[in-house]
Image 1 (cartoon, rainbow, N blue to C red):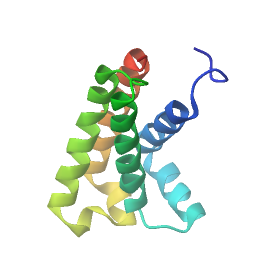
Image 2: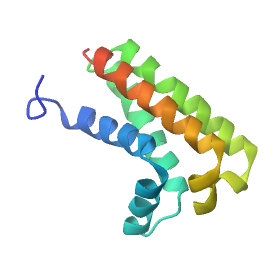
Image 3: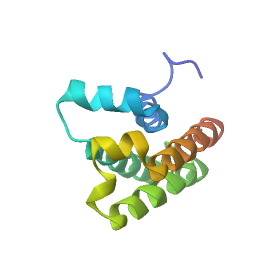
Length: 118
C-alpha cells in the first residue's frame, strides 16, 4: 500500500511512532514548535493507541499491529510511574529511559509496518 492509498489513521499512527523514535534534539524542537510540554509526545501516543484499538474493533487494523504498539505503551507507563523528573526537557536529552523509549519506538515502527493490514 502506497502512502497515498494508506488510510489517514495509519499515517497518523506511523507519524506518532516516528516522533517517539526521533533523537532528543528533534523531539525538543518539535515540542518547542508546538509550544507544548514534552509529555505531549506521550499524550499523542496515547491518542494513537486508543485510535488503533478502535480500528481493530472496526476490523480496519490487525490485532498484531495493535500488539506492536504495546511495548511503547508499557515503556511510557513505566516512565510515568517513575515520576515527573522524566518529563522535562533535560530528561528528554539525557535520561536513559528516553533512549530506551526511542529504541522501543523504532522496533514498534518496524513491527507495525509489517502487521498493519486488517
